[in-house]
Amino acid sequence: MTVRIVIIGGGQAGGWAAKTLRDEGFDGEICIIAEEEWDFYERPPLSKAALLEAEPALPRLFSAEAQQALNLKWYRPQRAEAIDREARTVRLSGGERLAYDRLLIATGGRARLPGEAWAQHPQVYTLRHWQDARRLKARLAASTRLAIVGGGWIGLEIAASARKSGVEVTLYEQQPALCMRSVSGEVSQELEWLHREQGVNVRTGCGALGLEDSDGLPVIRCDGRRQTFDAVVVGIGVRA
Image 1 (cartoon, rainbow, N blue to C red):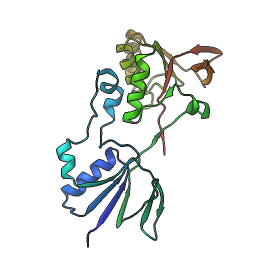
Image 2: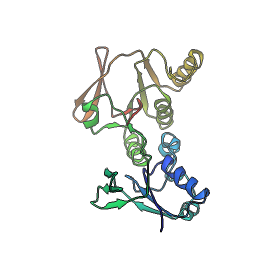
Image 3: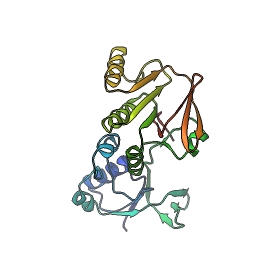
Image 4: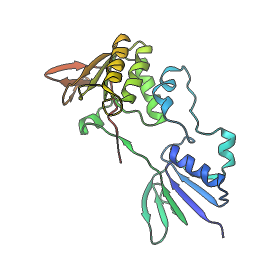
C-alpha cells in the first residue's frame, strides 16, 4: 500500500521537507498544499533582485529538473481549511478532502501589520510572497515617495532597493536604533549612517504611528506630524 505524506505549505520549509524525504529514500506519495501558484522559491531576493531587475525571474529553490524529479502532487492555489485528525483528512478551500498517512504543517508566518486600517489601505504593502514583490515593484515604478515602517533587515533592504530606483524614502523605527535585536550598537550606527548616506530619511525612536488617507494616498502620523506618501511598506515581523 502506498504511503501518502501531505505537506501543508509551499514555501522553503515545505520544499526542503519534500526533498529530504526523497533524499532519505521515501518513495511514497508526497502532496503539497500551497496558497500560491508558484513552485518553491527563495525569499531573500524578494527585497533585492525582484524589485530592481527589469524582468525578474522567480528565485527558484530548486531547478525545474530537480523539482520534477521529486515527483510531487500539487494542490494549488489552495488553502487547508480544516484537519480531521480522526479521519486523517484535510479539507481544501476548493472543497476536496485529501486523505493522508502522515501530515506535516509547514505554513510559516504571515506579515504583521500595526492595525486594521493598515490592512485595509490599498497602498500599504508587505513583502512576504512573490506576488507581493511584483505588486510593490509596479507601485514603486509610479512612485516618488515611499515610507517604510520597521527598521529591521527587511526594511533596510527595501529602502536600499527603492533608493537605487530613485524613490525618496522615509524609514520609521519605533526603537531608538536600527536592528536593535540582532546587532551591536556600533553596527546599528554604521547601518544608519550608510542608509543616510544613500539618501534615506531615517527616523528612529518615533513612537506609535497612525495611518490616515488623503485622496487614496496613505498619510503617516508621527509625533504630531503628518506626511503623505505614494506607498507604505510595513516590515515589522510576522505572526502565526
